[in-house]
Image 1 (spheres, rainbow, N blue to C red):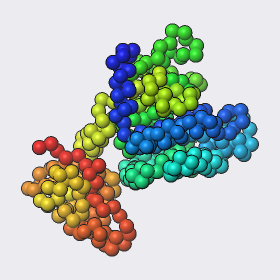
Image 2 (cartoon, rainbow, N blue to C red; image 1 turned 60 degrees about the horizontal axis):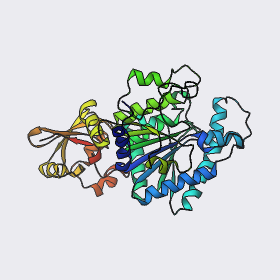
Image 3 (cartoon, rainbow, N blue to C red; image 1 turned 180 degrees about the vertical axis):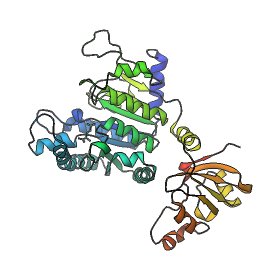
Length: 383
Ligand code: GLU
């Protein structure tokens, strides 16, 4: 499970191969607990690392906490636990400062910053998930750096993550990132609490979230584990299922991403497959199809060649599906050739099939996606 040079090399290989990387930055790293201000030397060093990655053609998405920690200081709220509406108000105040800091930092490095605020539903509900993903894809394609946080101002307890560990794992899974970096105040997962147990040992690699690994993260009930290792291990579970490798590394050093690349101590959670394979498996095997699309021979050839399914190539729709549902794609003779997530609900799909994508807006009376099923949301059967 841990320790060998080979295992360490597997982690470094995962980092080198990752093109799309999500980096989660916790409040404790970002905000000085005494002054309540942003730790700007550290954040500058992180921005250098991000710019370096960006110049090497790697895409970086930041998931940054800190809104509440900054806002409560600006609003002079008392220390100690806040009421829900107080933290929501603090988040509203702090988020502007947070976004502004990132904007300034990246502007100084010639980069554009984009603010993305998500709630639980945006990453859980497939309909909204497709939207959020396309937006982030588009930002990345334009070289912008998305800075994501939970939309704390509107998220109440039932619809809230509450921690950015799991949020960042959902984001990584949503955008099929190869790697998720959790920058933390500890440099990995230990067999026992490292603060109080001298024989605690850091794991180099975790390949599966076993009950033993869960036990190392501590119980849900203990004060120490809250928002600590437990949510990180839960993030690991989400990441591994999505084919995303995850690493818990120390953010207590300057240039933490450079340090990671240079082999700083950390714990890698290595996924058994890559994000594309994991997603195709999910689409093909785990979703109940709600309908079917019959396509023509031209569209079938296009799909086999790796293209998306356009409305023009569809001859018939069946079933009652909503946007984001899984549907069966049928080729000649009604044979199932694959499955995919459909970008339109049944009633709209029916109206646009056989039409050119340029006609969609005129037919529906509003803009829509050009594809009925995007190739990234499709799993074709093997021949
Ligand atoms: N979304 C919260 C904030 O920005 C932080 C959640 C967390 O620390 O994990 O303040």
